Each structure stands twice: as C-alpha cells, then as structure tokens.
Amino acid sequence: MTFLMRPTLKISMIIPVYQGGIAFAQCLDSLHRYGSLAYEVIIVIDGPDERSAVLAARDGHRVIQLTHNAGPAKARNVGAQAAVGDILFFLDADVALSLETLAQIQNGFERSQWDAVIGSYDDQPGSPNFLSQYKNLLHHYTHQRARTNASTFWGACGAIRRSVFWQAGGFDERYRHPSIEDIELGYRLTRLGYCIALNKQMQVKHLKHWGIRSLLKADFFYRALPWTRLIWRDRSLVNDLNLDTTSRLSVISVYAMVGLAALSLWWTPFLLGAIAFGLALITLNASVYRFFWGKRGLSFAVRVIPWHWLYYAYSGLAFMIGTSQYWVFHPRTPRSPAQIQPLSPPRVEFATASLRDADR
Image 1 (cartoon, rainbow, N blue to C red):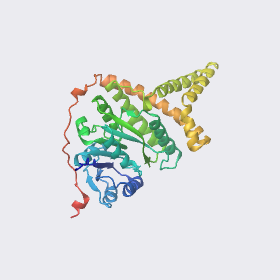
Image 2 (cartoon, rainbow, N blue to C red):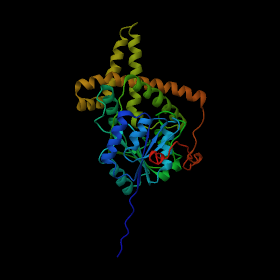
Image 3 (tube, helix red, strand yellow):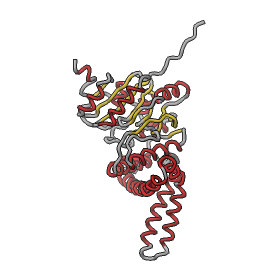
Image 4 (cartoon, rainbow, N blue to C red):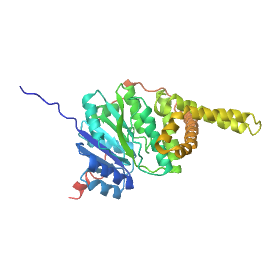
C-alpha cells in the first residue's frame, strides 16, 4: 500500500528595508542562524540604499531594489509579487528571528485553518535604553494579554496564505511611511471573513532604538492619527489590543486628572478629584505596572508611569483630532466586503531583480 504524503507548505520570507543600519545586520544574522526552513528570502530595498543592498546580498538572498523610496507597504507588495511560496511571512528589518519562529508558522498553517497569523515581540528588547525597553516591553505585554482570535495583521512578524493576501488586495500603498498599513490590511481580512490568529508563543526580538522624538512622532502621527481615521472608516472599535476598555477609561481619567489639577489652582478642593483620578489610573493599569516591576524592577516600573500616562494623553488628543479630520474631509460610510475588489499581484518596476544577477 502506498501512502501519499501531504506536501509541506513553502514559506517565502519578505523583508522591506530602508537605511536599516546595525539593526538590519542583526536581522540578517538571525536569518543565517534560524532561517533554514524558509523556502526563499526576499529582501526589498526601498529606494537608494547601497549599504543595505550590500548587506542583503552577501548571504545569497534574493534582493529587489526599488528605484525610489515608496514606503514599506509598496515594498512588501513588491516582495509578495516575486514570492513563490504558499505562505508569505513578513518580517521587519529591525527584528531578529528566533529559533522556533518558522517551525511555528509552518506547523500552525498545516494543522489549522488559519488564513493568517501574527506573533509578538519577546521580553528582551535589543536596545538597552529606557524608552526602548519600555516601548517594546509594553508591546509584548499588550500582545500577550490580547485575544488569540485577532482582528488586525502585524507586518513586523506576520504570515498569511499567498492566495488570501492577494484576495484581500495586499497592503494599501497610500501609506508612504511605516504606519498602520498592516492594521488596515487586518481590518480588511476580518471584514472579508478570514481568520487571523495571534500565536503568543511566536516571539521575535525588536532591535529598534527609541528616543523621545522618534517615539512621539511614530505614536502620534504614524499610528494614533491614521488609526483613528481607520476606525471611523470601518466603524469598528474592537475591544482588544490598544483599544480595550481599560485604555479608553484611562484616556478619560488622564484628562479628568489634568483638568481638575488645573482647576485646583483656583479652588483647592479640585485637587482631591485630581488625586482620585490619579489613583484610578494606577488601579486600572495595576497589571501593567506589576508586569514592568516583575521584568525590570520597582524603579523601572515607577519611571514607566508618567510615560504611560503621557501615552494615554496624546492618544486621546490624536483620537479627537483624527475624528475631526475624518468627519470634515471623509464623512463616508464604509465599504462592504463585497465592494472590496480582489487584486492580482501588481506590476511593479524596480532597479534590479537581483544584485547577484546585476553583477554578471
């Protein structure tokens, strides 16, 4: 009797990069150590960037170089067009692969009905400074506490069946900066009825160095504002990840605390109200602060609190501004899934299909 073996799904890794620097070199080093299960690795250089191109080509990976910087959404779509694998695995250029990641992806798709799966950052961020540790650990905490039936996609460590990716239309290339192009794709996938899983054990290391300016700029302009417009476009405020009930109540509490503290300059009893809302914030987020205490100690957890409250403050401000912008400029009803047209792999132009081929 002859038994037919089910063919193993092939994984195509796609990494967009632009001026990746040391973090990109570390990402490539992790591929060298742990990327053997990938059928192919496609690195898309998003514009003129000789250093990244040289680093990418030295290990024999397939390299595609775009003629101009068009953003990670376009770069990922270009990589997806070139891929031949059954599964498209998107990894950011400032992320280090772990030993188990590819096996988790392959086994998960072969044993489940996943259409897509996302992972999480681990609890050992690569950059040692306080803001990098705080931001990346907060991301780890958020994903570890989230529902396993996800409503968004994640481009830093996310895999999707190639047929599903193109049926949904790929990434929206109107996002020209690293933004919420992955979240927007996830919303479309969900509305079309596809299943996105969050595998909390599928963890990778974030190597990004966050400073005050880079953190505030990314959080406010590239995430909170466009995410607010996306929420209104789709009329979808999911009680999960950064949009859960605790986060919403915390935003209200921050503004109430600040407002009452300001009023206490005219009438002192208002200060008691401000203190009450401050205590409410600590109570609402007690599990977050216990997490930081357990991971990095009491002193670190205390330093986290003002930054965490600032995060709620500017997130609330971004929601108010984004809501106003949406209703002034885009007061439209969302498209139904039937109105979202599936796309074929886009035709793109790039400088070289492969640096190795170009050198011949």
